[in-house]
Image (cartoon, rainbow, N blue to C red; front, top):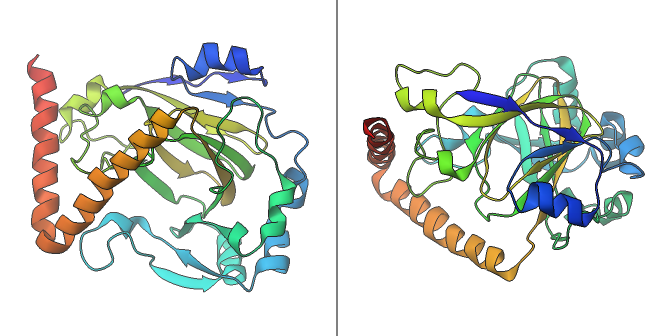
Amino acid sequence: MHLQAVNRVTVSNQLEFAKSYLSTQTPVVFTDLTAGWPACKKWTIDFFKQEYGHLKVPLYSKNVAQVGEKYLKPELVLPFREYLELLEKGPMDLRMFLYNIFQHAPELLDDFSSPTIMAGFLKRFPFLFFGGQDSRVGLHYDIDLSHVFLNQFHGRKRVVLFAPSESKNIYQHPFTVASFIDTKTPDYKKYPALKNAKGYECILYPGETLFIPSGFWHSVEYLDGGFSMSLRANESLLRRAKGLYNIASHFVIDRSMNRLMGQKWRTYKANVAQRRAIETLEY
């Protein structure tokens, strides 16, 4: 893999952002996009334990993508307080993601606002992500093809990103948004085309925001136990339409075939990914 550092900048206006990052589909870290949000000071581990510790939250492990009855299902459900106490104790694999706490606590919506750096933010879909130290999010891209602004509140994360054009080099499984390569300890013997993959990496610190362009692959490693929030944006109706089509053609087919074929389906996808990657090496 050839990884370059993501640029770190202060907030620009819409025109500069569109010219330098949005139109070019280039990741960037903003060091001050969330400045002024009450959430930056208010949202702490103790705050969530005190105010929302009673909520039952779904928790996922590294086995979330394994075939079988638990495919894409939570490992267990715990009161939020119990999970946060585990998170504070040290390394832990369990993560909480795509949980819309704002449906249960709408008052939290007053603690932040949609950035003005671009139009099209989806106010209905902010999500909080919590993870223990050393927990990891496998390489994937967001199925709805929205642009994502990942806002870090507590702890540090290492994020590795690849453009959609690198999908074959990173062995994308067909009909999924998943790749099973390990961006921390890449296995070039098993995945030789990975040597040619070009991407980005950054360490995301509290108070910073990572812009992940539409369709960009990204993996996340929790260097510390912590949490972040994603905001999604679509600047056009066309991008929304592409996202809906992608959901229908990937999520529905993959889930259905997984139920019908089980391990045979995953083997088929892995073989297709290998064949496509080898084709890139032959040219």
